[in-house]
Structure formats: structure tokens, C-alpha cells
Image (cartoon, rainbow, N blue to C red; front, side, top):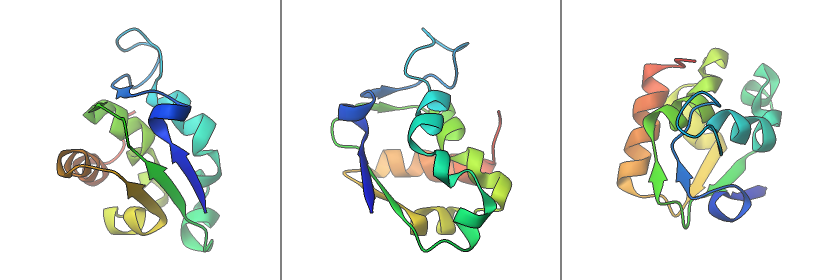
Amino acid sequence: MRTINVSREFYSHLVNRDARQGDGQHTAQEFREKFLAELDSREWWENSGEKISIDLEGVETLGPSWANEAFAYFAKYDVSPEKFFEKVLFKNISKVKTAIIITELKAGYNG
């Protein structure tokens, strides 16, 4: 199972949805395309036994719009929050960050 250490491999302040938000850097769209591209298929969610691990150690900020763009994007494959957390395993995640991700998964993709 591949592990992504977000703060080391990407950034520690996760707030920009895309290039139009904030300073337009370190965006959720960029993260999703760079690190989660293989998840962007119905086959991966429905038939693949694969999982991915995301380590949030050192991540200081996780904004709702970032979580929506990075994770709720996959709702288009009818991925429930429960299914999402079965296939995407988080390490070093706080209760607040977990709540943000769950809220965004339940809300659906707002891109």
C-alpha cells in the first residue's frame, strides 16, 4: 500500500481548492491529480482491492474547500463516506480534520 506523506511530499497548509483561490498554490486539484489519479475510476472504487494511505503528520490546516476538491470529487463514483474511509486510510489525523472530510464527503462535490 502506497503512503502519501502530505506535508513532506506536498504542503502543510491545505486551503486552496484550485488556482483561483487564495494564492493559487498547493491546490487540492493539483494534489488530487498528482497523488490520487488512480482513484479516478469507477473500477478502482468498486472492484479494486487496493487501498491508499494518507499521512497528515505535519499538516497544520485542512480547509473544507480543499477537502471537497481533493476527496469529495470521488463522490461521482457513488462513494459513501464509509467506503471512502475503507479504501483511503488516514494516519495522524485529528478529530477536526476527520470531521471536515466527512462533512465534505456527505455534501458531495461542489467543483
